Length: 76
Image (cartoon, rainbow, N blue to C red; front, top):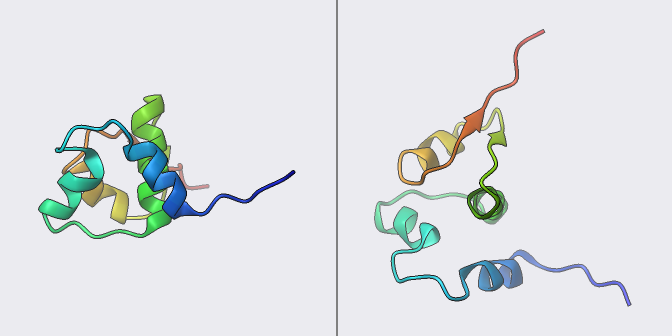
């Protein structure tokens, strides 16, 4: 059986066994807003210790709160 998993389920799975000061909570506590998709990508990047390749400025705000690494594509 194939199943498409909604971001709400991924959020629960990625938050399981996390301390009270988990990365999703740190952003919210500091007033940093973001989309579910952006936070899902951020959670995966944190968990796997990989950088995020992005042109989205929202990730700069996340990086101000979370220890994520960002890469920007080179123009042309």
